[in-house]
Length: 374
Image (tube, rainbow, N blue to C red; front, side, top):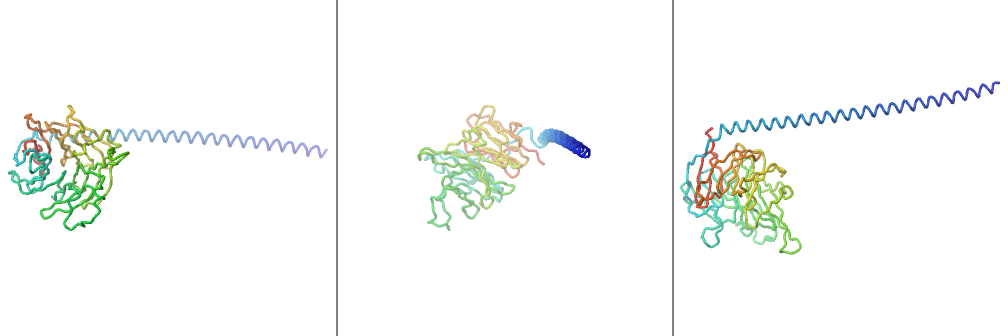
């Protein structure tokens, strides 16, 4: 009888244990299911919140952008004259002008196109005063710019060595060089590699940085088959390299002929703006090289020069007109129209008072005022 009760107790204990295990398993399963549901709902809620915040940020950025543009447009109405006013004409002693750059002392550097043997001063940089009198001239393969401290930075050939430079230096290592010319002397500021051709240069009036637009050639299967790449190299004001910004992958169709110069400038927001012959588009990129905008003439004309003013406007010169863009590359107005078909604009720059200097194919520089007095 006792054995019978003992067996029944064991059976009952077994059933209770199984029931407990079953209940415990179900509870664990329910807990996991509830935790999963809670986690999924929390994740969905987090994603929903992130999405909502992201959309709110986008809307805020869009509103801020619209507000900034309204403010800029309002500012433009306050600072821009209804039309550009001619203030000065500089008749230089050269038949054509390829590039100009203003010096604060009231003088202007002028680059002549390479006419071959037709003109004895072809390929020279000439400094003239406001009366067109030549103050200085020397040969350069161009292009050039004026630095923050009023020195002339210009492209020079590899063989144009400084007086104290080692004559036995390995000439196969270097290509072009940028020389810095002050009133006293010209010295080499930086050198490019033998495979690099400098096609554009700009010096920042904010931090003194030098931006050099470079075409790099790589021989592929034979010396007659070359691959060209393009980059912007940033240097400090002493010629020390800071970084390379490769632009091939960011600008579709960006190409130059080997003999062409390109135009490069930097805006007050840090954007880099470039263009060049045979390339009919002005391209803006941020300081890291990421694409920001493009601008083309409605008639697909080729830009002949670009620059920026202290308000962030972008000035684009075409042979027949000068367009004013905002800092996002959006067209604002035509500053100048060329009414004479036989005269073509060839270049432009701004002076320290934000007057426009416009060179043409007749060797004349016209100066215009387009901003109201502050």
